[in-house]
Length: 276
Image (cartoon, rainbow, N blue to C red; front, side):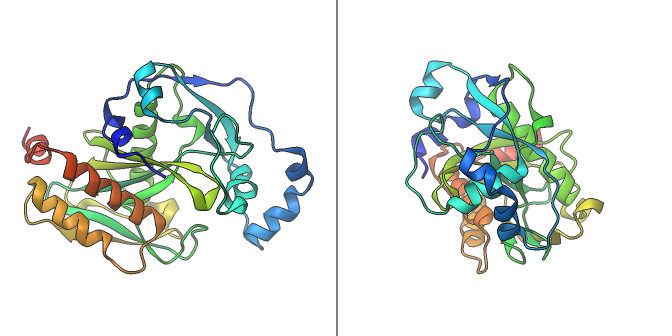
């Protein structure tokens, strides 16, 4: 579920982040079955229960206009595995009313300075969509990404750029990341997800799979763009969206990039940034 009017305002939102002092607690009926549910979800796989960022405020036009902060809460990665991931396709309720983890996900598509639109083939070690084609980088926001009082936009951008650095060795020190979309994933209990476009001052040849990501990133791939003008990037994004065997992250990030570019009246927004 996404709202195109909301998406067009994401990259300029100034709503701050407000940290809930209380960490997330599993509902009692799930807590009692936690270990069995994890075995059902993971099998023999071992994962670390990293601290993630749960979102407790719905991202709506009213929220963006209000200037009110977005409330976030510390959650465990495994909390999402036994709530959102096992909830499946359920009716959406407001995040403030949801008993699920609702940790924030982010998927970004990167464009390099040599006009390549980057995507990846995921490794077989991935828990979500293994051995499929995915966005340049995708994952969930770490609790270490949070800075109290900063904007929600800056938090999401930091998480997206961190994922790019970890997964494909991107140098994001001089990058530009634009938020292109927000949605709640009904197939994962309404989990909140952001999409982004990241412009890298690197060539495709400079990218490499991170040492810690060898089991999770199988290959870094590139789709050439005829030029850095909006229409050519839009054509490449549509081609990317049509690739078979696409993971949810690629489907979502591509759709949001297409919407963003269709709504953008500035033909040179990307080319001008690279030439600055």
